[in-house]
Image (cartoon, rainbow, N blue to C red; front, side):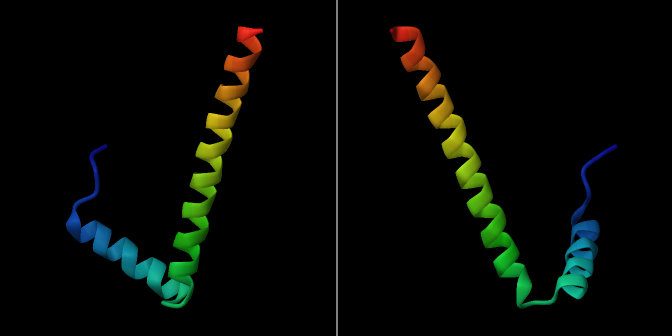
Length: 56
């Protein structure tokens, strides 16, 4: 299975635009971005905690 081409991406974006509306797309993108940011922060915090535990 290959990556979708430009035509397929345009169709997918159009379907998302119709389903969610133009007003909700920026909010959804912001929520996804903040979720990824929190996930990365928790991973870094956990790895820092495990480094500290092994140092003791």
